[in-house]
Length: 250
Image (tube, rainbow, N blue to C red):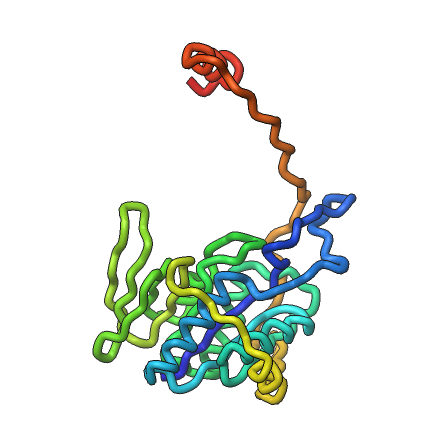
């Protein structure tokens, strides 16, 4: 089967994010950017499916600025076969716009399986995978902690509030990955060098017939309030008194 993996360029999770002085957004000047951690898990799962002989080709796709080629090359170094960049410039993409762009790539590539991270660590929306499944009409398995081939389909174990749920999906399908699905590998130097020669196609939203327009406006971005230092109490009675009169939580 052909597997399409969607990835996103985000601020590296080790970077301490700073808000711009005018509160219009996050300061990205000289900030290290990386592949979204959940997307790394999605790429790893696709590579494992190929190593098992289940997947025949892995196509990785992203929508974003031209610099997102870095993350696509990383995915190629991890084992993807080719990449597609949807160059949207500096435009802010909503989850629905991203899903529409991915849907256009799905129509073009005709994959049997689409794998995405369950959410991005910047917008934290957890929407794109579900929206893509709705637009394509594909079966969906979200928050996957285990993916297994079952006949002509897949069994996906999902993490839910009450524990685990296993669903049987008919292909084509959309799967979004959770943290416990796998442990992403590191790209070796030889594979990084090989990735430079793998094909990377650049498309535009216009070529895909998708209009990129903002469906919302960011009014203000604020850093979270600083946490106050903790205190020690001498007795349970003092703790209860502070919870009741100062914290007002009981």
